[in-house]
Amino acid sequence: MRKNIVAGNWKMNKTLQEGLALATELNEVLAGASLKCDVVIGTPFIHLASVTAAVDTKVVGVAAQNCAAKESGAYTGEVSAAMVKSTGAEYVILGHSERREYYGETSTILNDKVALALANGLTPIYCCGEALEVRNANEQNAFVKTQLDETVFNLSAEDFAKIVIAYEPIWAIGTGVTASTEQAQDMLAYIRGLIVDKFGKEMAENTSILYGGSCNAKNAPELFSQPDIDGGLIGGASLKVADFKAIIDAF
Ligand code: 13P
Image (tube, rainbow, N blue to C red; front, top):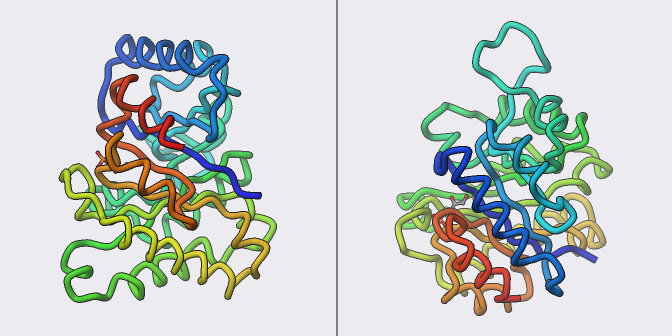
């Protein structure tokens, strides 16, 4: 049975001290609570080791927001999947539209990142999603299918079983414009159908697919009540414990 997951993506926010305070407070609020979802926080690289030491990672899982496409060596400024894993983090967000758009991450690069993440025992939270022009042209299904066909759909079934998918329409990220419940459900059902075609029904039933893009305490209950929406990837609303906890409680 697939898991429900609420994952925060802090992006480039919070100093180390601020991040530690946020993670510690979240851990305190969640410890002992009976939760209907797994909770993950995606912190900047330099926070990872301190945050994993400060929280119970069984209560608050920890994710990096990226990892290198190379194993090790002369790649100044890069952080490898093995390094991420060595901090105690268990997840890595890969293919976020901000990385694709601002840092030129292509499917080829992402294939290397996914392979290295998996080889190092990290769970990729693999992002896909279309820009507004694509949505306006009603080509979002074909666009997302291509993003998946070029990357994670080439994995073996054994490896695909280890990943989480996050659909984040670019036009909904940080804009306050959430996809309607129907748009989100339709896309996630479509993605699940693609997984059926590629890997079979059982795999599709067991794959967690998240929605991201201006998800908040107000819209999360309706989004999470949909049959194919297994949780959220949360940006802005993951930066305050009360906001993030309210989304977690939406399950
Ligand atoms: P917002 O929740 O701020 O729209 O960001 C979504 C996102 O990009 C999470 O990865």
